[in-house]
Length: 144
Ligand SMILES: [Zn+2]
Ligand SMILES: [Zn+2]
Image (cartoon, rainbow, N blue to C red; front, side, top):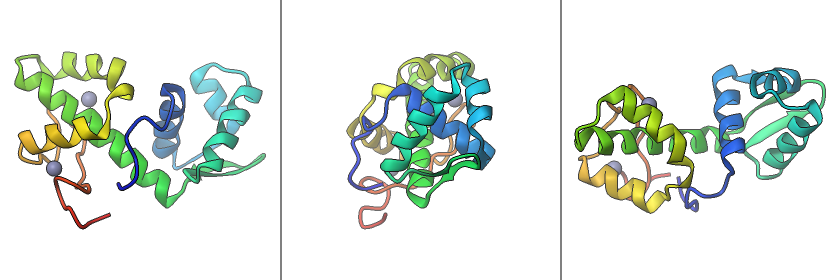
């Protein structure tokens, strides 16, 4: 994905985005229940995500990912998977590496992700089973 550095979204927004991806279409109440937050807080965050064109949000109907949102989640999965590759490469087991990554992946930039990708010869999935999609830079320089 072009024009991102990986630090665009807060951990909370990233969790929201991944959840919406999983559900395909999510209602405000479902998201509030899932993350145990007030519906008004959820609405506020959804409106902010809609402003960045990552989701479409219709009050009372819920939200779904846009094309851009889908690409962004692909980046998030790619980042997660490649960090896990790194930790497993250093000797950690896949399950522990997956959990550990979930605590800090939010703060790893795309530059780091691309270097990892190159070093692991552009893997298509991680030891924890996450899909690693092709991306710009290392995998297909001219691509999306
Ligand atoms: Zn994982
Ligand atoms: Zn690559």
